[in-house]
Length: 149
Image 1 (cartoon, rainbow, N blue to C red):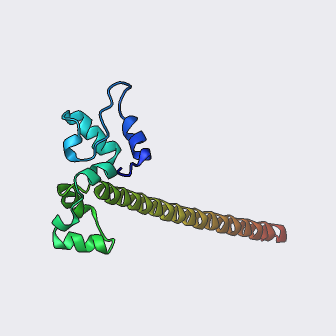
Image 2: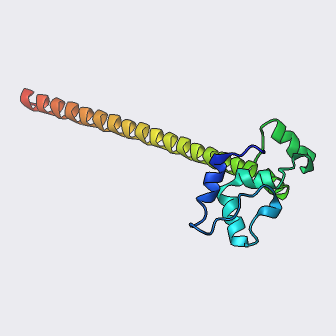
């Protein structure tokens, strides 16, 4: 008897309303003919989709295969991954790129905030200096008036 991953079966069954659940696919031929259902499976279970389609690393262009081996895949590799049925790998690359973009945006926002805070502090210090200079001038004028100048 073949080993069955019941967690995967449970996730698969949850994609379908009661009474409409097809058999758990063991090959591409077992997938439902309905394209909408196939797309739902592909989106919800990319690991299963990749497993059913073979995830044929050997069919990747050599440069993509090399980047995959080095864990350096980028967004430019997503189409090649999908073309050989490696949907889970493609989604992983997209998720990593999105996370990197978010991290870069957060870093830029933090740097901008720090720059604004530094500018505010400079303005505050300049305003305080101007206030102190103004007070010193006023005190000097008052002292002159008191001495009869």
